[in-house]
Length: 503
Image 1: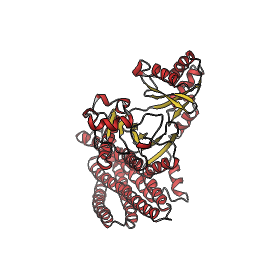
Image 2 (image 1 turned 90 degrees about the vertical axis):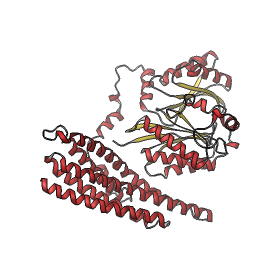
Image 3 (image 1 turned 135 degrees about the vertical axis):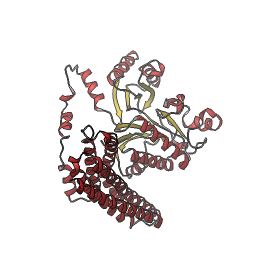
Image 4 (image 1 turned 60 degrees about the vertical axis):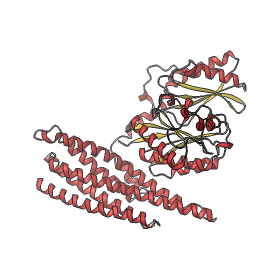
């Protein structure tokens, strides 16, 4: 199973599209990350970015975005309707697939420590990552916003950050946390009277006696006012229930609901629930949704899509991705062989060891499958770096730095594939020695696939290393590559001998 984490950083800039673009491109340049959505609101003066990827890649991309925002946004000059305390105001991590909330908490805490140490930005941990009960709620963390916290952080020990200095610079402070999926949902009212929006927000938010899973504020929104909300659990508090309550409250003031909006992405389930309610749909099944049925059909086992992508006259996916796929196939065979040993008569003594091998092979398979995409993205990042403008001296310097950074990242991905492939070879040797003899041929194939993955990955390490200008970095890459190849070939020889003996 591919491990996916979502991250939804909020940046305090919604009016200068070039600044937003620079921040987004910095994150998009991290291999293994996909930017799904960017929404900027000039009234809030805020941009919300949604990105997904492997836990490691998303953590790195979040750091890059925070660093970029710190260099581009000056909170001393920032004005906007939405509460905020930093250039990167909030960075939540959300478990999507193959990861737990605890995994996201660990990401948040690692990132918070790094941001505080390397960037000198005060960091507060919130929601599931909070170290104190009074910091679980983001509104409590952000109390006073940039201007108030700037003074209080220096004098009130209770407002000291979890990481970083107890002093705020132009980048302000950042809240980093882990939470379930949240829907940012706004309802606009047909009036410019802000007191009405604030009164309705008070009626629906939990802290004032409203819905358990709603956080709400009344804010200006151009020529009208808005009830801006965070829906923290759309299953327990559905969108339509909140909308109808707002509509009823607004009618008391002779005001209409003119429109609503969702900022960023939302699960389709939330919209289907609203459609069922408003359309009075009964006996309606999610299986009646066309896209759901198509998704089921796409789960058929077929290599055609990957083969077509490799065969296309495009640079990616290329050899690095194919090497990662070969490693994933090797790990899958190890997982299968171990699984076909557990519970078989005559193999009771090795069952616990086979269970461990199967679990580790499953994780390696997932990591290598992710690397199929990450290798392509790493190469694409190199291409984008070479395409950067090089007119002025400053542009040339920025381009050189981007190219070198991209080359190092592009070498690291196949190096990770090589490390994983050697581990697959080690597991293959174990299962070949002690596993179900009827599957020995499968372990033989696993060994060949893992060795091919190793050799192919190291070719991609070398082609990037040769253009890396830092001799120490290049030498380190080559030294590890040589050691991995030597170890991998020795394991492959052992596997071949074991397979021949048990055939």
